[in-house]
Image (cartoon, rainbow, N blue to C red; front, side):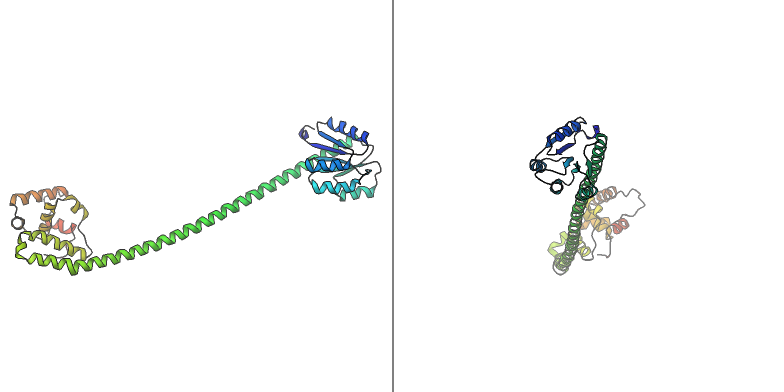
Length: 301
């Protein structure tokens, strides 16, 4: 019985000779065998060690084998108990099977029948153990799946709440941004533009007229919801930006020279640099029209 070499077997029989004979026979099959003539000692051992097969004599002097069968079954339900007796009867066999015995053998024991019964009991037990292990694996897998499901549901809930919070925060930020823009536009219209216009009309600020015009136009564009082209603004120097605003407004080079207090040649140099930086290579392209389109001109000075 190579496939069951590690199986543990117990023999309980108050007849010492029968007990020894069975021990020797079963040990020759490669099984681990322990014999007991004292049923109470055997029961204490069953509480400590698992036995695959237990051969139990029905008629024991100190305790009924059928009573012992019930106690063994309650302690180790997986163990297969095979009852043996020298006084067999149909009624006794029925009681034994109903009490949880795997099989019922009569003395004198037929070794071939004993061997067959033992092998069958071990095979059935192995199937039961495999079945129980499969059920336990399924229970563990189900428990793990439920755990993961719970975690995923919790995570999904947290993500949903986080998304809802982000949407609310974004909405509040947009409201705050619009409110800030409205306040800023109101201050520009009511405070800054009138102040710049007043400075522009001041004769003492005449020499800064061009700069004030540019500043005034910039703030007016802001209040209209328009800003200068970022490429134009980032590419040009402050001097070139002043020239570009004036060119866009239709001011001639001579007038620019006079307003900015620079020479006409310097104005031409700025115009060339503006074309170069903005990649206006075709000389047929009108600089004024280009700047109007790029700077979103909406009004004339």
